[in-house]
Image 1 (cartoon, helix red, strand yellow):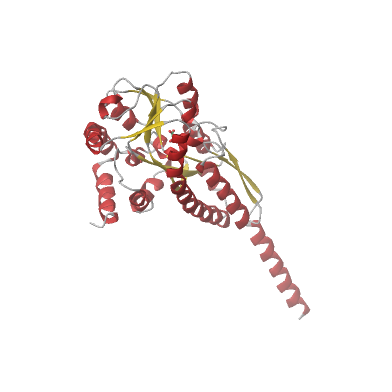
Image 2 (spheres, rainbow, N blue to C red):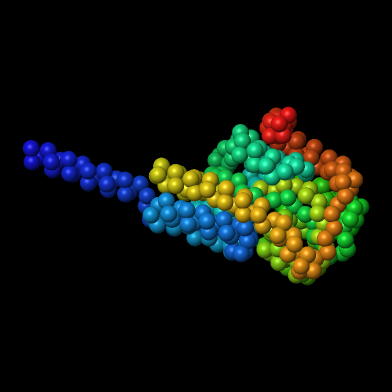
Length: 333
Ligand code: TK8
């Protein structure tokens, strides 16, 4: 009898120890490109708090903003090598790793954030994420960067033609190079972390990003004109190092996945709430805002057709068709 109780005790004890061991004390370095005072920074803090809460403080996410661990591409490489655990950055800069990621930056692909959510969180979005594993990365969730708009210093861009001769910084992704060069601009690929200085020194005339980023990165200090073009909806993606991830317990993975999903919902809501306010603040900070009229958007779409064709060639017709079918479903067609 006594022996049985002891055995039961021992069993209970080992069960407690085992479950305690499912979550180890870990420091997770989480890098991102924007400032702490941005939608990215707020959502990284939300994720860190959520992970802390779900793990009783054992998993500690430490955010590193302002590209202090390096720009997007450099962080991706650090994740692959296992030198950094996590990051969030643009899907655009993943095209060198998994070419299908070119899908998201196809010009004028989405007409609304809701359409983007449906396709990103649907089977096509998941398929692209699945493709990352073979390259040493684990994709968790998509966040909203947002619809991209043009800023520059040369003069107001009020029609597609006004892009001619503008030295425009673009992300390191061929679709932007082709689209803006076809519009007559001089597109210069640069990491985001070098952009402010490039505009300040006049190395480039302008750039394109969502209102929230233009505000949080203080681009209004070095840019005069803003043009509402909404030419691309660009997502961010939360990534983990596969080398590191594979060493986590099932419980740890579950906590990180759950917190990632919660952070996605928080981030999208926050970004959408802040977007129009950011535009107003940019005006209040002296930016001259013009909106490309429908007819000029139509011209830009036409100019972007070969760039879109190049995206389809690179990702393959079947992925493109799948995305279009998902889109049609989201549009209720
Ligand atoms: C931040 C970038 C940024 C992107 C860009 O690291 O590079 O213009 O829009 O959000 O990923």
